Image (cartoon, rainbow, N blue to C red):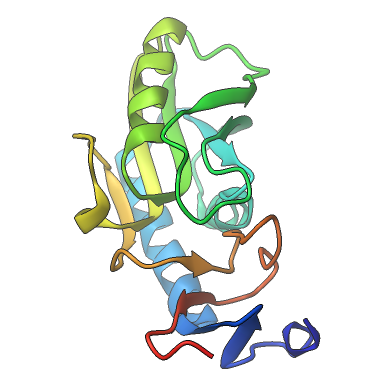
Length: 190
């Protein structure tokens, strides 16, 4: 893990697997600002509630909120479908519920990554119980080739291939979230 101490290493070795930079910090920050600008235009004169899905979305959401200029509220939900694995278990469960009331409010769900779509499908059903005025979903990453459930993502940062990624909030067994870029599992291994 010593190579993570460098500010922006070109590659990370995790066990016997090699991850290489896929989306660098500058590209991430530029895209986050573009997404915030879209939200600023779409929610002008509104007071949305941003709901970050923990743990993965916290860095993305933090950077996004810094560039959002409309009045807003922030809350978090925590779901679990991965545990420490690289592949979803196929079952979603809520670990932490909302603290705010979203009844009649405009909600923006903030996800780090949409893979199979299972968590977004679960969130859609959950949100119906809360009776918001509207619900939109923003995801930093989308793996279109991995989708197994029909879901609507309103704001997409980047479409990526169906490969495992870490960094910028995304983890591998709860590690590597603090990387400033997004790293993808290398074809060449280590």
